[in-house]
Image (cartoon, rainbow over all chains, first blue to last red; front, side, top):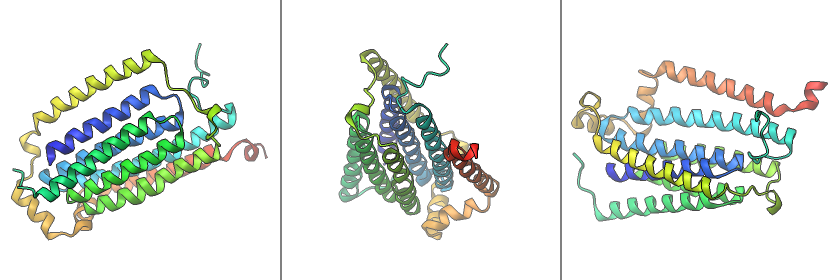
Length: 97
Length: 183
């Protein structure tokens, strides 16, 4: 089942990348990043079955980082929304010259 | 290397894989954030099932608790807090050229990952199969994660707690808003 897991990981990760590139809604882009992180977790678990259980420890670390990222990122989104009344990335162009 | 799998196992593995893939496609094509979030919860659940089938029961439970439970609830909570459900506020997806470029990037990335995953791991990384199986058999599902976590990776574990503390402080400071700061 290693090959199938890796193929599924590749497909899910690619879907996440395409979502990040095509969406303008900041929250959906964030969810696409979460999807990419979870897809990588599947790789760790599939490899840990054959190459040693340490892969599962790394999954725990990835989950921790993604939880921290979600907390801070959503706080930033709320702060931006309070400031600009939108989370459409097209309208958030403060740094555009 | 791989043992023989029963038809029952293979069928369910492919079933959950197809559910995950279909939900991910449905997720990425939604314009409404609420619908997208619920499809993503579906992806998380089917991936948890796959984790359990790959002998990582503890990771499967944590996946449901942390991802489908905690993180996605925070997402839905923020969507409702910002009141983003109205059709007028839904952001249109990017134009045709962006979609085309994203498709090309996606195809290149997919091909790249497929080529890399066919290459296999270097020999030094591979734990002997017998040793690995014995390790998995001796420890229970939690012990498989806990034993390395509190021995070899203790420093990383402690640093993780610092990371979480910083994230909590950062989220509170960012989310507090202007009114409190002025007063």
